[in-house]
Length: 329
Ligand code: SF4
Image (cartoon, rainbow, N blue to C red; front, side, top):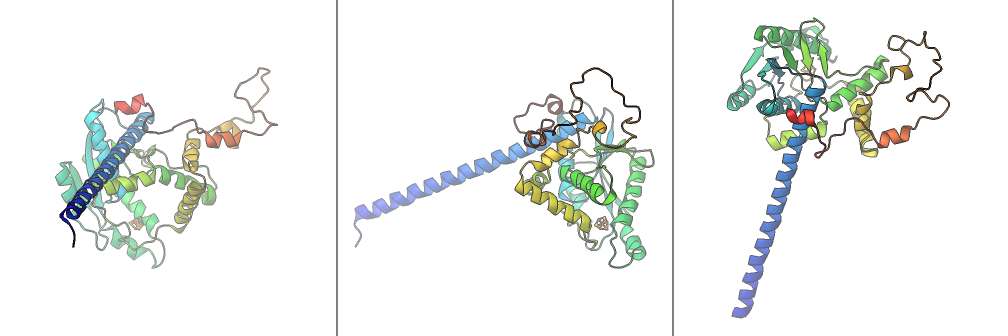
């Protein structure tokens, strides 16, 4: 039979264990909260930096934020709203969703979310799904026609709403992926620009998530519990070539952490004189000048590529990196 002393000892041990477990849980919760806060700050800084670097938003702009119901566009809206609160300029935001009438699309999710948020919004109902499924043969990818229709509709809506900028939620990895798709299958050095004028010449399209890594957006969506709408409702498979490029990029990043960042930085440091496009560099009239040129080609020696890869020196986003322009946003 257990003595009173032994019972007391067990009770004390149990109480101590409970306190220790609670303290471990508190520490874990604090760590998670700290990491989440860091993530939010990083996203704000990167979006602010992209806006500043490419002069994406100016005073008086009315920005149409295109919301698909996916993680990227939710994050874009969320961060732009945060930045607007402390931006040095005034600009408007209107969220726009195009309901393409795909089977199973929940029409109430975005209006409910946006109403709760108190953001002005517009839902454009256009049954492009029926058009695309009628025109495209079964088994063929519908994305090309679908995107063309969507683009035309969004441009029209932007004009009707008086929007001066159209914001899309493409991120760093989308932009790199497009670069490789064009390189491998299109034979062109061409990426996805952070800012462009539409083919109609009437709209300016911006990509405020240009510097944001996809894994950060995945985590941010979890933290914020965005009401994600699945992106495969139309039944179309993501382009196989894009999937292949995505896999290739993931493999590279796994084997050589930081490589994607280095490659992305390379897109911001183009040297036309060291490529072969005579439209970008006047090779025909290139002549010896007789004067030394510090950045000139060393021609016969090997370029120090390996150091460039290990020490990217353009845009490095760490939580401690000072960024005056981005902080203004
Ligand atoms: S995945 Fe579906 S909704 Fe998206 S572009 Fe392709 S066809 Fe359109």
